[in-house]
Image (cartoon, helix red, strand yellow):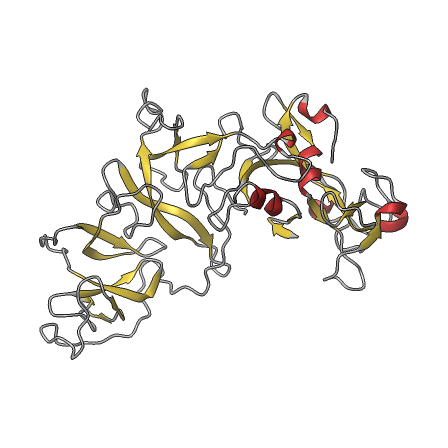
Length: 394
């Protein structure tokens, strides 16, 4: 089973794999929860914790690395130096890993860049600038680039922007974990949508939530919420998919309102570059998750409002196995097991799963005929009014 944001999605990866194929999601920026504690970090206003080396910049190492070749970044009082690069080059650290570098020409003082390169200002993953260097220009949309927020890093009409974010567990600071070339626009202007590509799929202009103050938006293909009718009996999902971290197919949030009591569309299942589904969690029934006999916090359940024209339904989540599970009191790391043959489908099963909540006996995988199951509750998802009343084939 797949653990995503407190939920277990037993069938969603299988359904996506069959069709060819997290979550903290700021309004439109494909943010994520990846743990990046293993990355070298620089705090704003601090000197990077790298090995310092005051070498003679005019002297080349015995085995010098040429432009574009790998090197080991080193820092002196004036900034990053030549390190093991050839003469007149600087070992420039990767924005995502300051321990890895590439030999580049510096353009800090208006220097001319070689053919196929442009002058780009480099930033660490949490926003500290560390120089301008001649770097390759990415020609392809959604492909990797080097310099955050640089319009020189990508071909015309694109900007190097974050593909995904992570939050440091210790400090709570957010930083990007990937950079890709995105088509940008100016949200709120009369022809914002028209300024975005309209072929092969019409795109719209949305505001990038991490770009506050710059009024910069992203051109994206809007993807509707997943529907249960898009799942075949085989478990294969045939509906539209999203890819917000590594592409430009974003969940359509135009009908969603902001607020703590409102459901939010999220692209779930595409954390590693593959396609995901647009889901809008809207509710959960009571669940004594730790089996301690008390309902604490969100164990009491919750209910969120769906947009106009939508209602909270369990049909698609039940089909994909999007559930929250119950754990044993004596062994908190183990899920509480039950027998589906002794419980009524879709109803609480207190004699198997315990009293005091709404937990039912769920099959280990959607569509399984084995009687062994897990205790838990099915999560609600916003579906168009009327669809949730359709015959439940799952």
